[in-house]
Image (tube, rainbow, N blue to C red; front, side):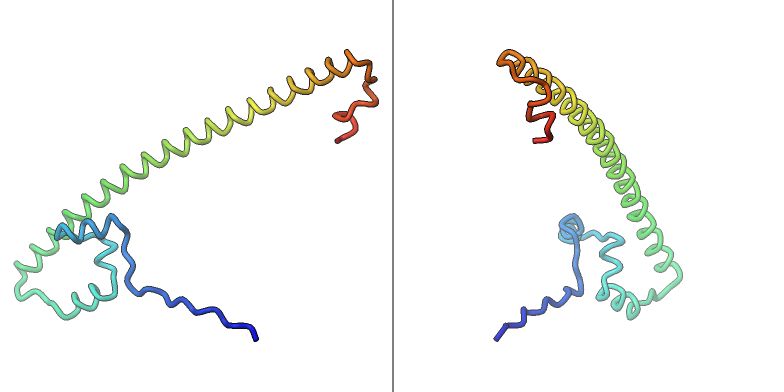
Length: 127
C-alpha cells in the first residue's frame, strides 16, 4: 500500500531575511506592509485626524523612497554581475573551442608519428 506524501501547506506570511532585519529594527518595507496581518491591522486603525494621516503618509513616502533607492542599487549590482558572468562564459566558451582544436591537432600529430592514417583515427570516426 503506497503512502500518500504529507501535503505542505503554504505559509501565509513569508518574509525575506532582509525584511526580518528591518522588522527587528522597528522599521517596515512594502513587503511587510502587504502581509495579510498588516493589511487587516491597517483597516482597523484609522488616523484620528487629517494631520496624523498626513504624517503617516509622509513617513510611508520616506521609507518607500529609501526602499526604491535600495532596489535600484541592488538592480545595478545584479546587472553588473550579469554582464561580468556573460563575459566570463564567453571567454570560457572561446577557450574551450581553442583547447579542443589544439588537442585535436596534437592528437593528429601524435597518431601521424605512429603511422596511423587519417581515415583510421578515432577522432575522425566520431569516437
